[in-house]
Image (cartoon, rainbow, N blue to C red; front, side):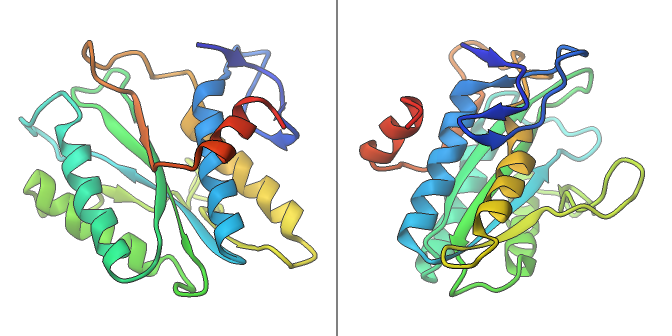
Length: 211
């Protein structure tokens, strides 16, 4: 497992801090880029959005990844069935809290979906159903900093737009948060720390080879 502390990875910005030894895992960065590249090659307009999933207080559910697998199955099935062609990456993290939490990146056909409201609404519905809780705030939209300032958590990638490269780089940097090394490494043995959509091998290999 390789870690990078550079400010860029394969030509695009990432969230790292070399002085504080805060790096990103390159295996996750490669999968993230594969998802973004695959969707932007399939569709000339892509909506890419970030969400966080957390557990309710005093939740006594499983410590493995059963909940995220159940959630993703329902969540992705809904958007596939409605023609949005969803692709995703999720990562598992845990620090001092009792339960793990999950970060999610999802990319859909932007010609079908103009704004992230439906993604957020359905995520809240399906996560509530999965963990059997009506507690509010379990799905974070990731659109506020810790200081409460607005920050982008959704990006519209229009392939033929003059600002495509800049928006792509902004999206890549924001989503690279999923690859941060910190708070990973606490999953039970034989349980994955991230999952992702199936991507054609040509795109997956290209990203791993740095082309």
